[in-house]
Image (cartoon, rainbow, N blue to C red):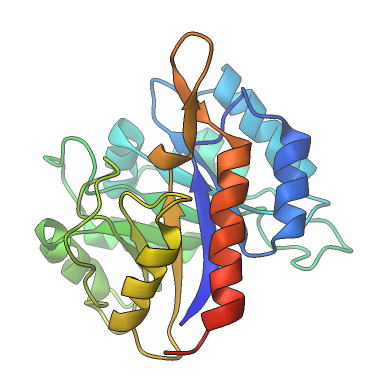
Length: 258
């Protein structure tokens, strides 16, 4: 299998933007994602200002960025409502001279339909309209068996999207086994309890269930955090580098092989 992205989620204002940029430049398939919810991400709070600055910096740097959308914002998107400041962020493009010139800096948006309270309306036709309105952004939806009906309805709208297998709904719990892709026309990535220490073993297990030429990605968050002086767990760039490096070395050794 091929690892298209090694996703590091949970970056925030405590992180040094230059360290993220340098790590992203060293590993072209590294991706850095900000967690977005109404309580913690809004104009112009600390997390928003941090990420907005990072996006601006990446207009001239080839570093992969993503947004992971939760709770109320997730519910809005699933009703077909795109917050105005999302629209602003999603339309910021890379400048000439970068590998993806004139493409959105935020290349992927993950909508966490399996996390938190899942008792919300999912209007597949309106979600499909959002996907069509932003054709240069890859939209990702958490997948677990509980979300099969929602994903099936969206699949019938004949739009492009990807799925992240995350049975624990963002709680960072490893599944007993990884499931093979459920929808053949939609790429599947994998998340749940992945850490710098176990990423190689997890990649070995995931590789066993995927076709030899399959392109996937992995996503880690909770195990990339360390406590600060007050005991609050925050994204740790050093842990992220270990995770990325070990996944990268696995790819060098095993990519597209069984």
